[in-house]
Image (cartoon, rainbow, N blue to C red; front, side):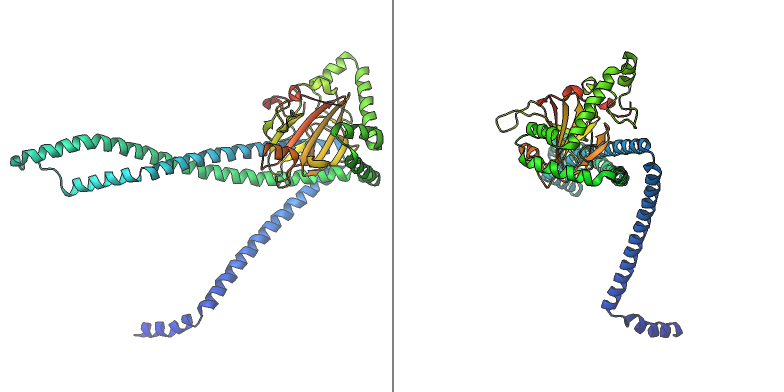
Length: 432
C-alpha cells in the first residue's frame, strides 16, 4: 500500500509537463548536441589552420622548399582525385548490378509465388502412399508424375534464386564498404585541398612586391582579350603590347641560348631529370625535347582528341578532358605566363610560353592562381575547375554537364597535336 501511494503521488509530477514542454526539452538537448559538434569541428579546423600557418611561415623564406611543397601537395591532390573517381565508378557499377538483380526478382515475382503455392498445396494435401492406400494407385501415380515434372524445374528455379540472393547480399556489403572508403577519401581530399590552397596563397603573397605593376599588366591583358579575334591574334598581341608577356618571351629566348651554350654532358644530365630542381627559374631543357615526359594537367578522361570533328564542320585544335568538379589544374610544362584571364566563351584562359615558339593553352577553368609574367613549374597548381554550372564552348560542344578542361599546344602561331608529349600513366609523376 505504501509503495502504491508513493507511485500515485509521483504520477502528477511526471504528468505535469505538457507534450509541448517535453518536445522543447528534446529540442534543447538536440541543439546542445549540435552546438557541441560545431564547437568540436571549429576546434579541429582551428588546430588544422594553426598547423598550416606554421608550415607556411617555415616555407615562405625558402622558394625551393615552397615550390617542392606545392608540387608534392598538387601531386597528392591529383592522386586522391583519381582514387575518388575510381571509387565512384566502382560504386556506380555495383549499384547497377544491384539494380539488375532487384529488377530480376521483381520480374520473377509471379514464378516465386507459384512455387510457394505448389509447396503449400503439397504440404496440405500430399499424394497418397501406395503402402498406406494401395487401392488408390491411380491417384498415387498421377501425383508422382506431377511431382516428377515439377520438382526439377522448381529445384532449378530455387537454385537461381539462392544464387541471386547471395550475390545481392555480397553486393550490398561491397557497396557499404566502398561508400565508407569514398567518404574517407573525400575527407582526405578536402584536407589536402585546404593545404594546397594555403600554399598557393603563400606563393602568390611572396610575389606581391610588384603587385601594382602586375595589376596594370592584367588590366592591359583583359583589354587585349576583348579586342583579339582568335587565339593566334591574342598571342601575337600579347608579345607585342603587354610588357610582362614581352619579358616572358625574352626570358624564354635567354633560356634557349643558355641551353645551347651547355656542353653535351650537361644537356644529357638535364634531360635525364628535367623537373628535379624545384628552385629553377627557367626550363632545364627545351620543350621539344620533352616528348613523352609531360604530366597531364588534370585528372579525368579525354573526351575529345586533336583532329576529331568539333561538331561545327571543323576539327579539334586541342584535346578536352572531363575534369572533376573543383579539381586542380597543374601546369603541364615549365614556362612563363603570357595571359591569365577570361576570354570569350573559353571561360578562364591561361597561356604559358614554353619557349622556342611553343605555347600551351589551358581553358575552361573557374579560377586562375597565377599572374602574367610569372614563371611556373611543370606540375605546379595554376588554376582550378568549377562545378560545371558555367558552361564553356568546349563543354557545350561535347554536351557535358561536368567541367571540361581544354588543352591546346601551339607552335609558331599554329595548333599542333599534343599527343606525342604526354607521359604514360605510370610516368606522369613530376620530380625527375
